[in-house]
Image (cartoon, rainbow, N blue to C red):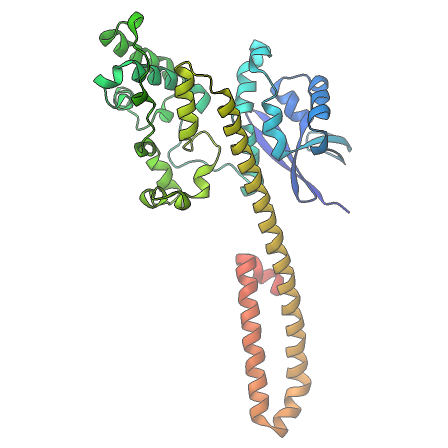
Length: 361
C-alpha cells in the first residue's frame, strides 16, 4: 500500500501542497494554478499533453478540502518546465506580478520545504527579489557598457553609499526606482544619452572579482572562498543552487551580451536546462541518501534486538553453567558480547540522533 502524506507550503498568501507519493515529491496542481489566478481547465489540458508521463492522479483529501477526491499531481522535478510554458506577457495585467513571483521562486520554495521542511531565513535578510532588481541591474550594466564605468570603476559602491546598504538586495522595492533615477543622473551628467558608444569586449569581461559581491554567501555557507575558487573541482555543490541569490556568472554574461544586441537565446535555454537538470539530480541523490539511511537503520536495529536476546539468554542460562566449568571463558564471552552491544548501540545513536533512546528503551 502506498504511503501518501502532504506538506502545506505557504507562498505569497496562498497554500501550496507537496505530496509525498511513493517517496517522491509531487505538487497538487489545481490549488497551485488557481492560486496564481490562472484558468485550471486550460492549464490542465496543457499539462496532460506535455507532461503526461510525470502526472499522477492520487485519491486523497487535501487540507483545503472536506472530502477525498482524485487530485492531479505533477512531479516536482517538472514544475519548472511547466512554469516556463506560461508567457507572462499574455496573462491578465492584474495577475501578472503574482504569476511572475510564482515563476521566480515557487519551485525553489517547494524544493526547500521538501528537503528541509522549511524555508530558512537568511541571516542578513534581503528586501527585494531578483526579478524586482532586474531593471536596476540592466540600467547599471548599460551605463558600465557605455562608458560611465570608466568614470566610476565600481558603480555599485556609489549605489550602496547613496542608500546606506551593503548589497543591492537590501534595497526596499520602493527604493529601486529611486536607485535607477540615481544612475540615470550619473549618465546624464557625464555622457549625452544620444551619443552612447558601442559595447567593447572589455565590458564583457567576467573576472574572478565577480564573486566579491557574494562574500556574505560564502560566509553563510561556511565555505572558504579562496579554496572554493582555487579550481573547478573545489567549487562546492551548494553554490550551484538555482535560487536567485546564488552566483550565476554565465547567466550574467549572457545578459550582458543580450543587452549589447547579441541573440543568445540558444545559450540561455541550454543554461536553464542544465540548471534544472542539476536541481533534479540533486533531488534524486537526496532521496536515495535518505532511503539508504533508512535501510541501514532498520538492519542495525534488527541486529541490536537479536544481540539483546542472545545476551539475555547467555546471562540467565549459559553463563552460570560455563562459569563453573571455565571462569575465564565465561568472562571473555561476556566481555565480547558487551563490546558488540556497545558498537551496535553507538551506530543506532548515530543514525537516529537524540531520539534513538526511545526506540532502544
